[in-house]
Amino acid sequence: MKIVEKSVDDVIVLSVKGSMMSEPDAAHLRELVHGLLEKKCRKVVIDVAGVERMSSTGLGAIVAAMTSVKTRGGELCIANASTKIGPLFMVTKLVKVLKLYESVDKAVLSLK
Image (cartoon, rainbow, N blue to C red):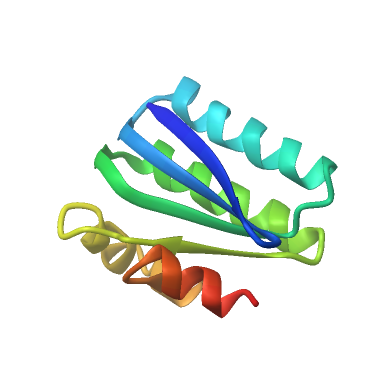
């Protein structure tokens, strides 16, 4: 799994590519989000357009990231949940706790 970070004004976009299947992948995402929080970043978008597969470990990493961000008074949302990944958020009912947007632009706009 590879994560590319970019800033759009005061919003950090994390573009994830590859598979989110293993604990090392999950730990990488959690560490990255914790690092952002240490730098006082409070608005995060996770772009999952490039995610090919995701397990419960990957979902858990996203939930942990969301919890960490919210605990620090921030907001986290998901962009580009594809037809492969999107149903996971529905089946697990995470759509009730995560904000999902069809594009990064819409997700960033929602955080401004």
